[in-house]
Amino acid sequence: MTTPPDLGRAHPSPGRGDEQRVALHTPEFAAHPHHAYREMRERYGSLVPVELAPGVPATLVIGYRTALRILNDPDRFPADPRTWEQTVAEDCPVLPVLQWRPNAPRSAGSAHARYRGATTAALDGVDLHAARRTVEQFAVPLINKFCSAGSADLVREYAFPLTFEVINAMLGCPPEISERAAAATAAIFDGIDAEAGNRMFGEAVGDLVNAKRTEPGDDITTRLLHDPAGFDDAEMLHQVLALYGVGMGPMQSLIINALSLMLTDNRFADDMLGGSVSTRDALDDVLFDDPPLPNASVTYPRQPVLIDGTWLPAHEPVVISLAGCNNDPAIRAGNHTGNRAHLAWGAGPHSCPAQHTAYVVAQEAIDQLLDALPEIELAIPAGDLTWRPGPLHRTLATLPVTFPPSPPLHIP
Image 1 (spheres, rainbow, N blue to C red):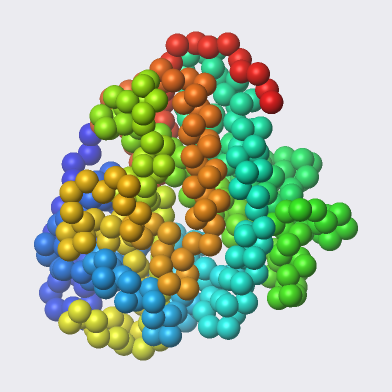
Image 2: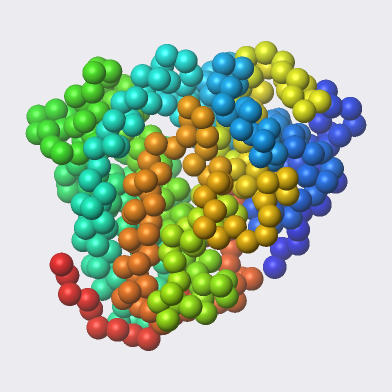
């Protein structure tokens, strides 16, 4: 097992005296982020000098009230990264995630309002009852593929393919385009050829948009096409790509992180067979402690800003640590089960517009699995689970489980 990170080995922090920058890009941080947040708070308070990647400075916000001030002040803390992008190398490992795109998460002002309004309207059109049926439609065949084996990796065999199929259904993606998108996604995540995979994925999404122009449906893509915002081809491509990004990675992580909690935490594990466990409570616990995107809410001050006694440089990333803020002792008291005051969905004008849909999909995905395999158990010690490296996300690399072999379920 890896040891907790030694924050004293970080790099010097320019402009902040002799303080050290905490490296968020190390395997140690990925393995023990909560230990790191505690040490950061003791040393720096609510604002922490960090590195997102080697040589990429930023400020990490781990104070709950400070985060709310920043998130609700988009004039001083806009989300548009274009000035910052000019200061980083093209091969910067966090650039593909943080770079500017014509969509709501990476824009500010009137552009943000235009993208956000259309995305929110398209998501509001999702029938949540139909979404539950969609999850069941894809969950049961996936469970049937491994239920008789008595073991599975729930990341590779369940959460990833399930979230992919569900987001495709919500976007109205035809099967032939979905298959191409799946092949492209596999190339990206398996490291076969990420550049070619990204190109293939963009082509598939472009074909999806064109297909919805000729054959509209009751789906998110069609609603975006018909929105009064009147998106051009490039804007439509990026609206759909953003929805794929949110619908696949974070949704998969939410499902997996909640299942891991339910299988390892006695508050949940002891009650699973008795049926008294609340999946919604498990989801909220995860959103407090291990949200899928703990450090992906990023702003870029237009000019130097003094906050909490610290000057934040202009155009340098200010990263809201959703996990760090959720565990701020100033607002957290004891057991938070049933408490939904976490920042996992963000706050202010950039809060997640898909949270109601995400709750429904994640809860239904978990309930379908546990109803089918109620005696499921973790196949390895909890301490041997490994987290994927990276400063912006929080997700298990695998979730191996065992269970009594079961006959296939009836497909609805």
